[in-house]
Length: 610
Image (cartoon, rainbow, N blue to C red):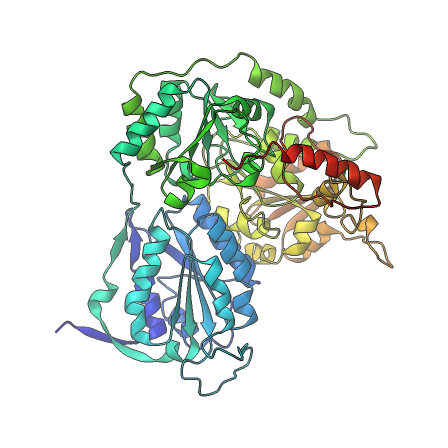
């Protein structure tokens, strides 16, 4: 009979998690973010306290943003490491549902351990318990089921013997990677059990590299040889597979141009001759024109989101074929794509061997230089005058201050589109964009998570005033923990991105910019003072020149550094981009809407179902 050790279920969970390692000897779960309440303070809180010298616990200010920090940590770590987040039952748990969805969309590992009601149901209904009148097994934590890759409710201690290995299998499986929710009943956390000591043995979780099927490999190679205008769409899977060198070697060996999604950006240096830059709705002319003429579109590690495909209207060649090299069959076969089910790095290497010395026809000259001739003036330093700076000019100022160690990050609003088009990424993982879920409120917590993953990197977070108001509380956490990163707040007085979309679909300016909302007192928020009140060093600058001066001081900071600048809410980069399917009303008494609807119907004819 094997040796056993008597522990509570919560103690066993913590001990098991701490013993799960990467192939470099680090813990796969770096530590735990926790806000305690009834449902996790007595059981899991005591267990985490007992392990605090070996397994760190950090306290945040909001359950959702703690999880955002954990997600950014996992993304910047290339999915090789992750974090755990625990909450009380009820609102503490449901606060994390948004973050779970974000991780699910982006295929990122995250371990969520919300407290749950009593498994024995003795004190039902407990504080914060939502009762289902028709199903006694349902709690609010069932909301996690559609937004996690693996869900389990722990109603007996010994269930952890199977639930925890399944959780780690999910988080470390490249094809199935995503968030896990272990809904932990509060009475069970405190129950003791005689655990096999072998359960806590150190376990190494390696990144599995799926090799391609030989028939699929041959089919893909034949399709590339037959193509006259092939193009590669590089997605986030290129980074997660550490396949950037393989992508570069493949593109150079076979002369196939590369375009980059939001998640794939920085897969190749911006100035590589075969890097045509950003694709799709927020893309540039070189990539989009090439994709429109391509007869073979090869996705590598992309899920072909609508912003990438122009709502499936971008790939316009009448005989074009979609192909996809992806580790997940779900993504590899979207829209009838020819699949090559494989790890991105191994798949590219073996596909290159299969192609031998085959090279695609040369691209037309000048397509990249023409593009930069159009957009470089937009980011140039202006003559500081009375007009408000544009977001493009703010990007230019940060670009000029950036180094090879800089990571720029963002998630929602105006900046994702402008950064995708304009930012010149020099090395892999220097561009961190959460644009799968485009979740407002990710930015500040995400910047903190990036810095925790790579403390030596220079992290610059772009956020608008609207997003700042959504979720800023982890600024205080970063200040308390001494985590240094820079936040550039572009104050355009509202939701300017959606205001422009509203106008672009024929709508009147309404309820987006603060000037177009109902209020008795005009808004006059001092973001610099607010950030300072949470412990950040902050400054409000009045021009691009002052912004550039402030950016030179960021390396002196021991915590978050916030720079606020007022910007023009209407300006955006006109070159590049492609159609995006946003439903426009068929009936309206406004001429602008009717004109937008007519344009919409014209564009809709270009959308392809094949």
